[in-house]
Image (spheres, rainbow, N blue to C red):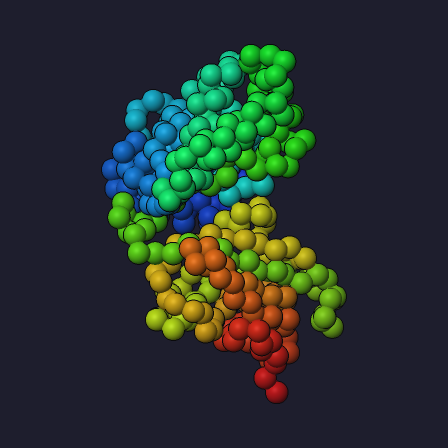
Amino acid sequence: MSSLTPKELNQLAEETGLSKLSIQDWHKRFIQECPTGGISRDRYINLYRSYYPRARNADTYAQMLFTAFDDDRDQALNFREFLRVVTVSQGTDEKAKLELAFKAYNRNQADANLTRKELQNALMAILNLIETRDTPDDRDEMDKRQQTIEWVMKRLGFDEKNEISKKDFVRRAKSDPNLYEFLAFHCVPKPNCSDGDLRGKEKYKIAIKTGADGKKASSIRGAGTDANVYLILQGEKGRTDSIHLQCSQTNKDLFENGNTDIFTQFLPAIGRIKGATLWHTGDKSQGWYVDDLSVTNETLNTTTYFPIQRWLDADQHDNKTKIDLVPNQAPGYDQ
């Protein structure tokens, strides 16, 4: 699969809701890193280990999800199957996340009820994923684990029955934010690195807020943009390459009025962030009003804040679409 045919591209766009441009970009990176056309089960599990390097055990959870995604049972994820990973993990459809979790937790029997034993096994896999290797394996921790399992079982109604349907599982989990956060499928590693390349990299959460119509701006045009947006971070130890901000975890349509878009990136360790460069490639019809940018290094648990509060617009104010940023200092406009 060296390239997608127009028919394949149309089908994937209809199935996923992603733009054709985004699908083509994902496909290009997929083929670069997976020239055989698929991600093997072993490679997927290795990626998951890299994604959760401190987990007590990530393999069981990774195996459950791999089986749920591998619809043709060939022990590899092809591009169509992988794109489903992207769509669900980075989308905001709570029902889709829960339906996928249900499918994974009951060994891919999507239409069968989830039994007490299957749920208990799934909960142990989740706990092994979110607990670290440093977590003490003593009586207190065992009691906490059991309390968590009992809490989930009760919230799902397993104190009254021994199995649960997919419909009831989704309904109960959606009605309880804490239960949803614990049970729903949220994220998986992307094949933008070879198996070992995540080593030495740190996990960053990048959040950008777009202004609302008319807010802090004289123009009556919308504040959002459809242009491609890029970011470079500068730190004490170096700088990143250009980061193309795409596939927001919070919004299907990126950089819309009043929205905050969140992106997860694995980047080289650059130390304390000292600055950033933000830009887009849009023309005069694609101006963008940016409220602020925050960058959280989740590996080190540090956040750097950039107030921006200005247009990036080839036909507005100073006509700049690319700006350099300093933490806690709004850039303003060139006179």
